[in-house]
Length: 245
Image 1 (cartoon, rainbow, N blue to C red):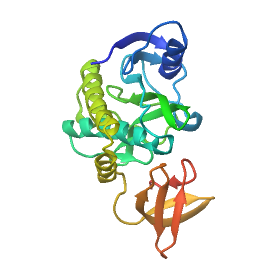
Image 2 (cartoon, rainbow, N blue to C red):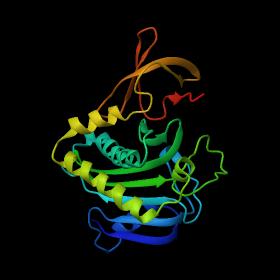
Image 3 (cartoon, rainbow, N blue to C red):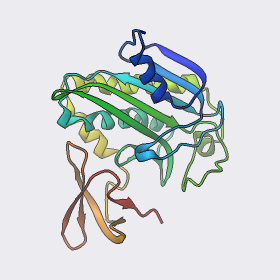
């Protein structure tokens, strides 16, 4: 098990871990920074993350996948998402991955992440992965549209450190597979656990709502949708919106 640094409060665990790496300290691969509270938790493309003090799990881990080509970097997102959703589904069924890497319970969001990759030539020299998982928080007051927690789902409190340890174990299991080049299994399981993996659903791009179904996820992470009239459309992150109602 990697070193886990537990702190009371920080602006962002990703920032804290990056500052630690940039200091004179030796930070080994797999090191985790876990905070009880974040003053400026970040999500994809500048989104914020609401979390009550000492109620949820907010952590970052550093990996050094320097054998993985930069063109394959989405595999990091896939393996981390898969590690989280696999553990949560061991608690109760109904968890899935909303592309690219949000974790949902049915149609509500329970976890999100921010992945910051550093490149060295054609490979990934380091990856800092920040994860927020709603555990024991019962009420959400921000304008986030659809948050949910394990407490909301199962009506009981959880030991946060135990959940953190179990999630780390499953993430590192899939990370080991990726380092051994087993991308096929990771991609298949990612697709098997994908939100709206079957049937036609409503999406919006360029302010136009359309119906489509998921065809595939490209290695670089692009979402490929097939519309009801047979048109194939490809989207990068934030280029398409899921219509949840």
